[in-house]
Amino acid sequence: MPRFPPHPERRPALVTGASSGIGAATAVALAAAGHPVVLGARRVDRCDEVAGRIRANGGEAIVIGVDLSDADSVSAFCAEAISRMDGIEVLVSNAGDVQPMSADADPLDFLQQTTINLLAPQRLVHHLMGPMVQRQRGDVIFVTSEVALSPRPHMAGYVAAKAALESLAHAMRMELEGTGVRVGIVRPGPAATEQGSTWDLERATVALQAWERFGLVRHAGTMLPAHVASAVVAMVSVPRGSQFAVLEVQPEAPINSIKSPMGGHQ
Image (tube, rainbow, N blue to C red):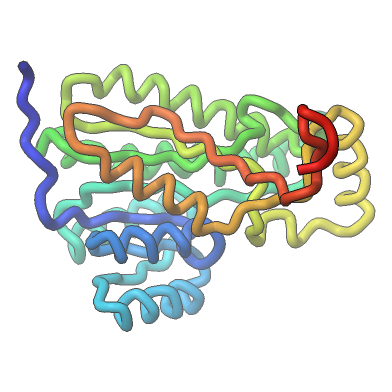
């Protein structure tokens, strides 16, 4: 039988998009599970608040500012993270941005979406993967979206980037097979985060009507960021010798919102 050394007691984790939503919840959840955490985002003040909560609960956290649309910023961010929290064991590439756009959008706007949602995660891997392979252990988690499998109209750049990110993750898993480094996808459905909060009412209405027309809105339920964070913690906590390749997390429908298949209402 193959043998795998257990995870070390100290497993530093780096989380991007940690200033709010799923990223902040993931940082808190990982810290509660015993991981020292590096919180990265542009909004350093918001990250400081999250890190303060972690420390108040006995956890370990540091904050490093990063602009994921800037290659030099990503490079400096990774170098500082390695310097201040040596031995990054877990990378949670969570940061993302979704803007309303159709397939014929301005190419520069489309490029910005793919830069944040696809190129930035690859840049993180470029800087952080090598030491994991050398140690023969590590976890890389990509937080994607259900739109990677069920595309939604009026989100062209985001949809294309998330679909490509999942393909990248699957290819990486094959490339890293036998190295001790695991690659996983956490694929959330609708969640109550700040994404989409900057959309103007007119464009949001057009998008929502299109989603309903194509049957992409099932019910009114949405998840809390902590629900998605629990999937990330589960993925990195599974004992060595196995891995969760994909965890899709969907909101539970509110009680009484759907008819029972046996008749009546639940």
